[in-house]
Length: 253
Image 1 (cartoon, rainbow, N blue to C red):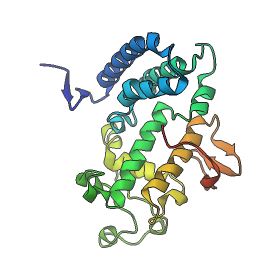
Image 2: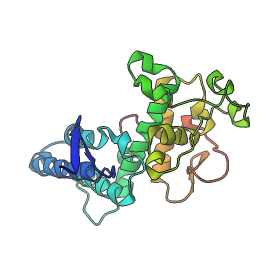
Image 3: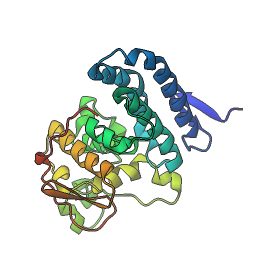
């Protein structure tokens, strides 16, 4: 008997904590960083960033939607990999503030990269992109808008049907809370109304979502002022006042 198994590069443990998978990512990430350290010193910042993306960041992003709602300690281990990669690129010392460096590079923290991936999967599922191979068809069955005919035939019309929110199913266990059918709609409903418009294009959605998640990820308090708009962190009260077009963040994460 074994306590873990590997499937498509993802290590799944018997308790579904994803601790073994995080350990595998950390081992591989630190190994790659040790191999890149002598080379990075002779490269430009842009070249070093490209190499780190190819050998380290891709490991943090691979199947990272499975890491949503894991424990904070596991997220801190993954964040330490990204912090080490940033220091390798920029030459930042260990005692320097890494949050400001991440902001300058326009890199999302690991936890927010997971949120970004999950929200993007929900968008593709809701907009029929599963038919074009951009999202698995079985995910589309887990994302149902309150305004959809499929839901209205079964239930009475809700006030939330006018704001493009998804139906969040009731769950009874912590494992059920981490499933895509529950976490995906919950992430979608936490987005501001401007990002949940039915006619928004994929490219525009990615750009605005990156800006929204970036500001949430770098905010130190629940409400963060940035230019001429205010973004409230998910779970706080109050509307989202957004003019995301004014923020010029790059698309590359």
